[in-house]
Length: 272
Image 1 (cartoon, one colour):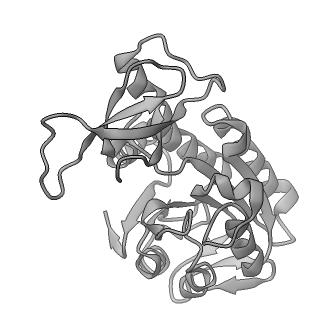
Image 2: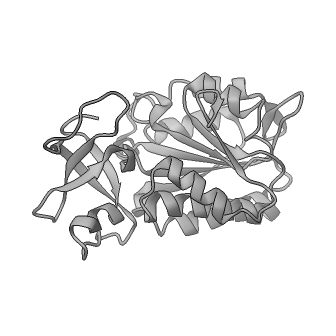
């Protein structure tokens, strides 16, 4: 992060300074501009910085920790079709996620892409600001979160099913390797998989290591209704409560302790 960067911050953080502030879109995050570091802020390695952030419509600057900022807020939901369970399971899950998450972000910051191939996954990420190829209107708001809705497996042959074919984590990562948000690395991205078993060793470690990114997914078979609940809670903590990612994950685990399946988080190939 540096002075002049555009970032997204939770409205809850703005409300610490301006209690009655509400964005025009009525969501839980708002875009701001980094105006400079807070005076006296420690400049030490691995210590979060506190920045003064300007927000449209506010006369004063808002101090916000870098841990609570998101460079990108756009959420892309990928319904990865299999031709068999789309109408009864995958489509309703993807649509319910969009309906709920639309309450947290501006209308242009969430979308559902209905895909069945790796090429379509890559094309969609590119259209939504992944990589450096310009795509006019959508390029101005790069994706930051990718949610996979589909079927997965682990054990001796881990993968995600695209159409009638299964693809390994190496193949999936390879297909999108140059499509990080805004032409940047995947360190600014978060992948949330609702494909069964993809949060366990075999898929998650390989995928997150290949892209040097954050990958969250279920460690076992997950029911679609529980999957929706896990995502709703995670983004509630991230956007509405304004928690850091680590806090949001811990709170989601606590809030869904009675679920049969839980989310596991991997950073650069290592489980967090």
